[in-house]
Length: 325
Image (cartoon, rainbow, N blue to C red; front, side):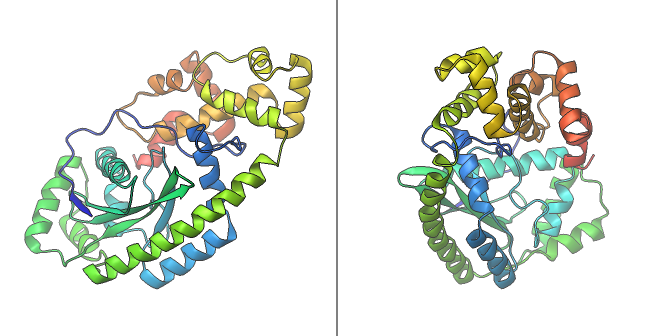
């Protein structure tokens, strides 16, 4: 399936979460989006996925990524074989936002099977769903390729598009990176999608094993507590409130939580909120203050202080680095 995706006028206001924190809760994907991200993190760190990713990229010259259902980031950014044209234009926030909108549209269409969309610059992106039983876990994504050789007329449209997005680069450099994009035939594209579909089936089987291992990795009461925290992270959360939700006294819950997770309750909640904010900061339409309250901080000052403590830089500097400002 293919969709020609028109030039986006405005990027979406926001999208759901992103990658889970280091201590993401081992809960079933059917329960929370965080469970999806925890599974995807575990799958991408598995030996079978790393070996497949390396072999696939070596064979096709294309980047491949496993993305959770709810995310707000460019799947191939910074990866080996990333398209040089895409890497160049994504440094500008408006271009980045347009690319993110294409990705969101692609994933919406690919929920039930492989799909391909064509971005405003004429490059194709494809996604294949990965499922655990009947639950959608994430997507295997490839992209940033031409399925027919680009024309000079097509490039002229891209030049105007780049100007609209505020991409400041000389015409010759833009031409060089644009025409250096990989071109594959329709037959090659179909074969690549078939390979991804087969691998998605293997990942589905592996996800069941990962889920079982995660469930048995910690006491159920802590699993339930993690899930509760992620579901209510935007609210004012107290240790007593979470302890009550899992039917434990505050004293014993505090001790057990620190022993199992390795960090205290307050630090854990802060890290969960900061992880979500990292993904929201990719959306140039959201102000830092909006993001602070969106993820559960009661003041911008507190958010800035905690963010810098955990990541070593301010939210504004982090966003500028990500968007290439």
